[in-house]
Length: 331
View 1 (tube, one colour):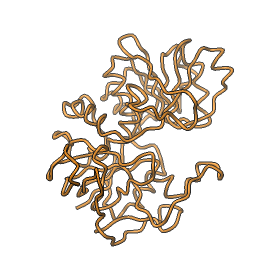
View 2 (spheres, helix red, strand yellow; view 1 turned 30 degrees about the vertical axis):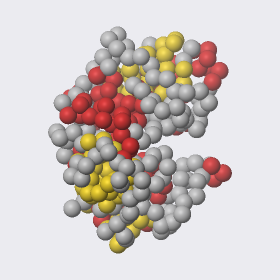
View 3 (cartoon, rainbow, N blue to C red; view 1 turned 120 degrees about the horizontal axis):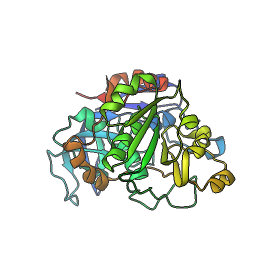
């Protein structure tokens, strides 16, 4: 089969299309013929050797490896102990995350059955492949972590903020993969949603249900938003603490990507700062599937690339300012 592999770490140019053996399945696994692969930020982190982390915290990888986690495809074989799927089932899922062993950038993948759910019939494979990591990230932050694994950056378990009519939520970075789904999840919960993104996303986010829009280039959201129950900062990182004063006492700031906050100021303001490490869950994807089937939650795909053009897809991802997801197509 064809697969994209890393033989060394570096820029997008190190993504190489190779001929490799179709993987064997082990206990609890199914063999999936992959139709589409979703691209996520961790794919780039693995590609470049996790330079986003301090040297002492970077994991080592046994090269060559096939990157990627998010797939949509068809079950073509299954281990004898797998009962939840049959050959021919259309499935989607995020594989083995947070371990970097998803091996999704390939024509076939051996997938843990518990990481998969049946693909909603209303979604084609491209849109289904764009869903798992981004949607599970939004869901596990806003609705239900679904695990006790927590985050490597905090000692306490993550607890979502109860949302409903009267709740006010700011989603920063609302146009991206996690952001556009978080807007829809918060709206489904009944919240009033303020979406902060670049100007080109305004009509897109209004169509997804955002109640207010802020162009961060014109109005820095941390300067104009006050008294929200929750800020979901999908950008996160070292500047996430700027949103502490946007949250009302008793509210919360959830950075999707860890960033240090002034703990004393957070305590003074009565703001909880929390996050969680997204983890694979076929069970949660199955729970969310009806919302994808009926259109309550829509997956936006900005661009698709053939598997052989994975390097170009990573180049586009590195430019940022995406509207939804990037997806690799196979076959």
